[in-house]
Image (cartoon, rainbow, N blue to C red):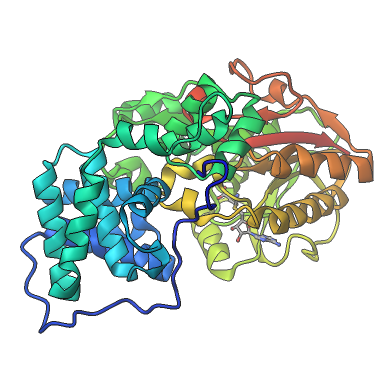
Length: 475
Ligand SMILES: C[S@@+](CC[C@H](N)C(=O)[O-])C[C@H]1O[C@@H](n2cnc3c(N)ncnc32)[C@H](O)[C@@H]1O
């Protein structure tokens, strides 16, 4: 996100050193702008408590009985501001007379909200500025309203394309930096996408832009309970293009939890890419027994539920290991009634006896493949996270290769296209073990855009799924 020669910029969260500011005026007056108030309070929770906007905001809207147009506005402002955070900060930096790190955190939240309205909504400039100044006054009193007003008036001097022309690096000499700024992504994320795609041009732009799109809801039909066609008919959705168990709902189809097949546990909500990676583990032939399967990183259990149902059809069982006890509970809930045994433990040393015919390693990862699901996620992850994660990923994959029997299959899956987490982990493990690599594309039949293999990298802009990565190995 930084021009060559400019001070590297990092969005200034989290700022845990500063407790959230309380008004320095008498009690906060009742808000007559519930949408912006909810947006500001959610941004504060995301910054201060490391909360997730898409969990905090819906609850806040319910608790405060905010509905209709106000709820829609609060959602647009909160998610939009969260996604564009680093870009908004770059622009605010140009408009502030002090570093953003020196701006009171809640004031900065409000400025971000105001800048977002000015640059990315049709709200008239005067309304965007005035409503933000009102929020600031309610929150902090009158002492900083002049500052807020001055900063936002400077932001309003240009529209978004104007600001982008001013702050984005040159597209010819720095295409990745240019697209990072233009699509409001941290540079390291744009670089990771570019490396995985082998593109610094149109396709990279498509991949980055896809992170701003609201993903369609995908359902998974539980094998043995209902078929995808039946589920589609029951829910008004369409059978998914690639997963034999998938159904895609129309955007804005409402809360899937209200659907009868979900309530009756005949189906679940699961991205089609996740379904495909779980199913891919089951596709390569294995000689001999094929009834003992293992999921080494199972929480919250979406893939365990699908694999448990599939192995159960042939009288087999699935062991599901999860390190976090609360997530292991979720696996227990979602796999109730299936031949699944849940173990709380470390997948690197799960203490299980015997060997397994098929093992899934759906490893903890940066989640760069699912940025569209979490508005703030692109700014929360740090490049430094990658090193720790790849170490854990390698160890988990080595453990899986210990636990699988000779001739058995291991699927290594991450929800990230970052090459260090995908090809890098595999290169290391293959060098250490000499394990055989299968062409995973054969386990994603009739899917376009899978590249040269042997691994599979899915993409939102190509497949409408999360950017899941899948490698298949045979011991
Ligand atoms: C990507 S998620 C798995 C998603 C899951 N397979 C599903 O489809 O719902 C990775 C999981 O691994 C768990 N985990 C992290 N470190 C682990 C370890 N050392 N052993 C086992 N599980 C671990 C995390 O708590 C997280 O629940």
